[in-house]
Amino acid sequence: MDHRTEPRCFREDDEIVFCGYFSGEKDCGLIFYDREGQDPIRVMLPESLRIGRQYSVRIKGIPEDHDRYRLYDQKSEIPDPQAFCLCGLSSFDGPVDPSRIFGKVLDRAPVEEILSVSAGRLKTTTPPEDDFLYLLHVRGFTKNPNSGVSRDKRGTFAGIIDKLDHITSLHVTAVELMPAYEMIARETFHSELTGEEEKERINYWGYKQGYYFAPRSDYAAGDPCQEFRELVNALHQKGIALIMQFWFPHDYPAALLTAVLRHWVRFYGVDGFHLIGGGLQVESYASDPVLSGIRMYYESVDPERLPSNHGHSGTSDRTVSLYRDEFLLSVRHFLKGDDHSLGRFFGAMIQNHSQYGVVNYLANYDGFRLYDSVSYEHRVNEANGENGKDGIEDNVTWNCGTEGKTRKQSVLKLRRKQIFNALTMLFCAQGTPMLYAGDEFLDTQDGNNNPYCLDDPVSWVNWRSESNALGEAAEEFIRFLVKYRRTHQMLCQPAPLRLMDYKAFGFPDLSAHGVDAWQPDFHGFTHCVGMLYCNLYAREQNPAFLYCIYNCHWESRRFALPAVPKPLSWTVVVDTGKSGEETAEYRIRGEKSVLLEARSCMILEARGRFHMAGGEERTPF
Image (cartoon, rainbow, N blue to C red; front, side, top):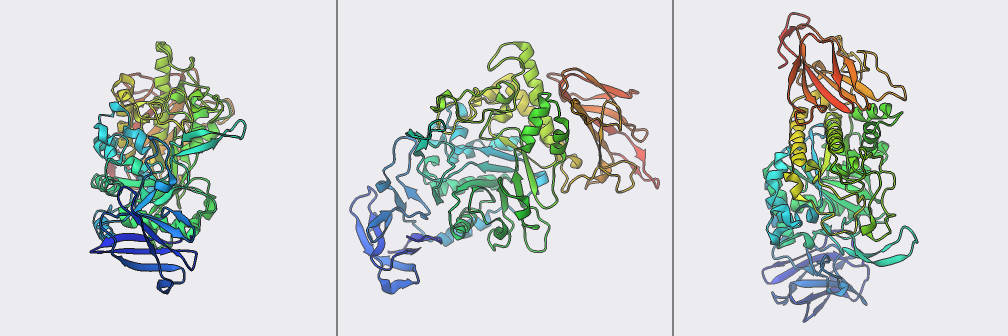
């Protein structure tokens, strides 16, 4: 069968309306079944109704209880690969019988859904520099009994709605869902060790080909189409965008891929897509009448392929962003004190582009979670069934002196400091910060860095972590950093910083410093750097100075403070060296330097009233 556009199958009065493509010229059509999958009614589509290979038909005489259907083309019978809704695919509880997968006849015309979605769309698109992404797995987010979600909603779209208060408390601007389209989750994997097929397992993450037009029934407490739409609407009411991840094989037809994306925008109001795999026509989406202005995220795409303007014609909207591991790797190398890491770290902190966004993260779905990245150096993947040899071998992590769980207070204190250091780096970096759900309160996978096949508490968010002292502190620190970032525009610029005094303010927009002011040291054995931001260059023209100092040396370091216009004075607003008091402000009076503890970060602000050239008086704070 040839499926290159969106077929529709819905009931209108006493008729069923269907539109679709078939590759054969004869003996093709639909088979309708009752709600038990029995009593088939075969409807052959007459060749006289075919235009090219397309059939657009109205079918009478199908009983109302026959709301399941499959397609047939000569001798083959398959579920509709472009059905808007399917049943028979709930595969977490056991194997799926392909012959029992049915498309569902919708009970009304899809055009009504388009009208209702249009009314609830977000009115504005947050630019990449102001975005904060929150990545989650629909099932894993609330499947754990300690999620506080009722049993019938655990692991569903409705479960996410029940946790919206938590999401909004983080000041998230966009929720990104790991694959949530319909699929058969159970499959036979090939061993990375032997290359041979192994026993059937669950593809928990969901990065595989599926029924791309339908929301996943495994993720719904009721009607998956309605429940997904309710999730989108609930997020939009909070001003939060919804981004969907899709994985496509390299041979997936380009026209059909575009039809998939259009479908989710038109029928559900999805705000963007994170596309993974092959067959991506990156250049064409910007000019598509439906997808123009929709957010697009990519990974393995050459930036040269990106359109210079992915937005409405004649605008400078940046709606394309790139996911890159460079930030994660650069921060981890610098954080653990590796030699020759400072240059890469500094580059990662300022990486930005005027034509597209850059997404930064400390942990992703694959690899160690944030807390595990300061607790484990070696993967603990035996539960995955591949003798612990699957997953990333070198995670560029340091366990702070003890592998795995420990009660040693010195180790726990250092881990806290390293986590707070990493979070400070993430939210002070140019680009878009992304957080993986559960990392805000330091959830752990106990060292498993590749639980792709585990539908159990290892993969599920453990909400008890939110109530322990360290989890609470990390979550509150993230809230502080998000607010701080949004009120200090030099940390989230729409274009790359130039590191030049290109407006003759007497200061560059950003300058690098060593332990001596204005003397950066990027030698291979240097493990600290200061970054001075001049807010005169910010879009809001706040005439303040921010000084972010990162000391990843295993010894304390004294940093000279850059001289700023009088009578401004320095105030410390973040000091990760003060455990439990990281955000307790204190002023530095008369001092020309500041001492940073070993492996700590500090943010300072120059505050006060002063006169600019021309006599204009400014009050930054």
